[in-house]
Length: 117
Image (tube, rainbow, N blue to C red):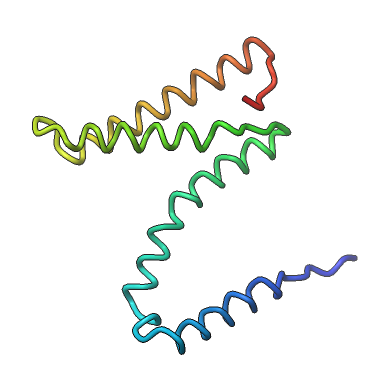
């Protein structure tokens, strides 16, 4: 039976860099830094989850990032309109990105074309 090995190397490098920057930069280790890092990584985590699902299915879809950017552009554009609130901009940008992703997925499945678009 194989033993499960945890990837200790990347975690050790992360901890080492955290300590080095914590010593070198005053105020680096704090609540604001952790919140900022988590906020910046959240979109990457969502996109990676979507790519992971397609890779489990045996496909590779490179357009996930462009659809995510499309959703962001639509959201920012709608948030600048006074008649639409920020929450509606978030909802509508999610709907637009989901619609484009669903249309692309349906086209790939129906036409049996390569998913590397």
